[in-house]
Figure 1 (cartoon, rainbow, N blue to C red):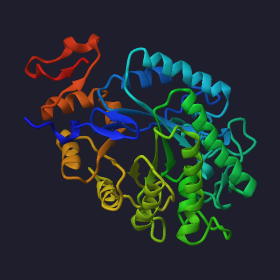
Figure 2: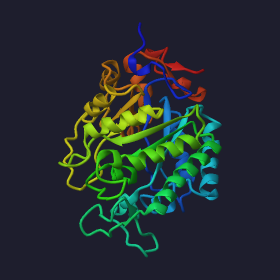
Figure 3: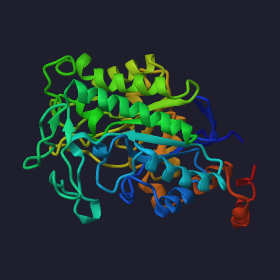
Figure 4: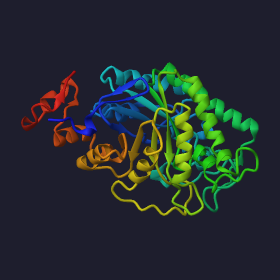
Length: 368
């Protein structure tokens, strides 16, 4: 019987991935001064036993002021690097799943409270708050504290910070990097005309708005080993009239493809509170399909992908090369096992769990 499309291997950079299931980055808002702790070991550790092909560490700030909240993970000094090293070394003793990291700067959406305490922006000067930065001095929402527009020194500082975090990621043995240019964070803020009102070479026409995100990509690509993939997460549309849209996303993806980007992960929204998102199963897949038709690099689809046949169809029909799951795998950390059982595939499981295999799926587990 032919292997289901969802469980066919794929190569990204120098990584040979066992299947097409990616664990998307998921913020935990549980770090201490940017440092991972025991929660991250539990959270990432059990996902590393899930049978997916790739685990992506949550949005990781390249500067303290780039954190979404005061409780976000960072990779910007020796302490944050050491904390992440402890976590990764523990996980790798029990899992050989490749691990990627999403590097991020939140821009004007930084300095917020953790979601379960409301998620509101925190004022500069508050013990948990700071002055935010952005392409232009335009707050995300009415009534928020306006960000400081980045000057040339600020642009250089942020760009260099992304590259420095990439160097730290390599020291940690991270297998791939994803740059966060989606969901309204700093690189997305440069791309969208709704948040970028600059009058210099970084604002105005599309070519200028793409300039800084591409400079960041180039800096990270130069700082990270050539064989390892540097990928990008994008919002395919702002879902707001006059904002970033799929045509601009395709133009950006083509520029990334020409620069050797390892893959593009297509999400949407997050840039403006006026967004109107038609959420539903696979609602972002058409955005991934449009990008895939225009580039050679692998394309990752994400967004309300919960069903096994649904995921299989996305890959089998060529809408995307991989699917990413987040909330789905939080709810069901063995989702790849169950998908393999449903679709007639094999999936890796640790030896300690082999006896859990249901009798009707006697060839489910690969204990390589």
